[in-house]
Image (cartoon, rainbow, N blue to C red):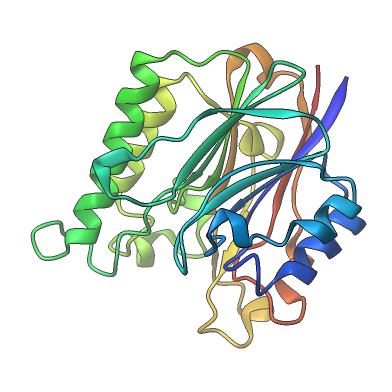
Length: 262
């Protein structure tokens, strides 16, 4: 069977319910993973999504902050929801689809403004979060799995608009890139997006601070789709739906898609 998966930091699922429904209507992914839902689970607006065929959901939420959800046209069963670093944040949910694929949806901490854990507690929390992700997948070797989400790190030089200028900016510092590589290595994860699109600048986030975001194009690839080697070769048609960043009252992220033939 073939199915299409998308990941999108929505920056409030209740505020942007209409945008979620628009993406569901226009692009119709079989599985849609959202981050930064900023809603308790019981307040997520399900009625419109269910009317569009998304009858199944697993989620973790909290009022006003964080929050992750997986909406699916296929049955999905919750299999994990880890609170790495014991932050009490809703940053991870995992569900197993009825085709046997496990989907991990992550919202990794952004890490604050200063890339120094001695003066910025949030940066330390981010690095510790990634370390615990590494240890989790090292101890629980994933199979037939997909990992998606806003990982808040742009690892490659061509994942940012200016590599040299951003080397000391949170999301592209060498220590963050190293920590993310450790997570990837622990699960033997394949970066599906870059396997499909190996060359050239590729972004999924553009700051709200830039009113001319499209022409300036000072973006970063913070949103990722990874897969375990046993299914990674089945992935294709990876893409960032950049136009979504230009919708009315948008999230500052654009959704990232991939299709899997299993």
